[in-house]
Image: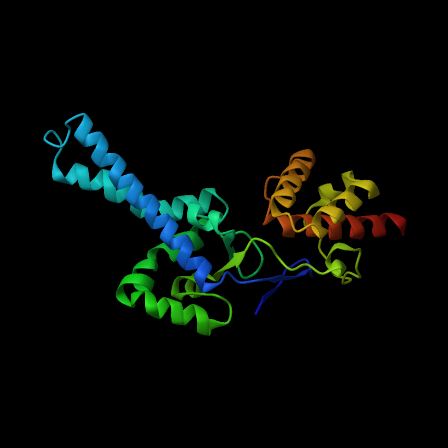
Length: 236
């Protein structure tokens, strides 16, 4: 099973949805982090004998608030990954191929209560299995899904391809590159090393002075298409 995403740049990406097992293991790892945080605070309170000086409210706040905010903060600042998701090589993405907005992360976060508490985790598992796009209720509402960070990419996606006449350039800065740069990017995209893809995307965006970078592989594919389109216009 795969999820196909047609981007606004006329690039079709095929993602492998994160398996239910991967998502469960990621959740377990995150829960272990919660447990580690609780034990750490208990140790601090005990060593410094703070429990008698702190109100129950403060103790609960220092324990509960970080745990409550952990999913949304880590996914937002770690590009769609909690530490558990990073360990399992899975990530949250929008179904249109773009990086999720803060609003999408918040919506997923708010609906965790419905997914795992009100409806019980079993219903979330059934929803993910039956949906076809690897979405729980929160994902459906936010327009997101969870994918493996290793994506299936056809060679046709990293070669110059026929673009529609109404193709719109996203990054005009791509004209600053040359054929050798583009060939290097194509070779990186053929590689299944996502860390290399991310590093390349960071370097290209830094060299070109681009700040509104989408998902790394999508960004590099868009750069290739924009370069091809701009080069074709210059040759006319």
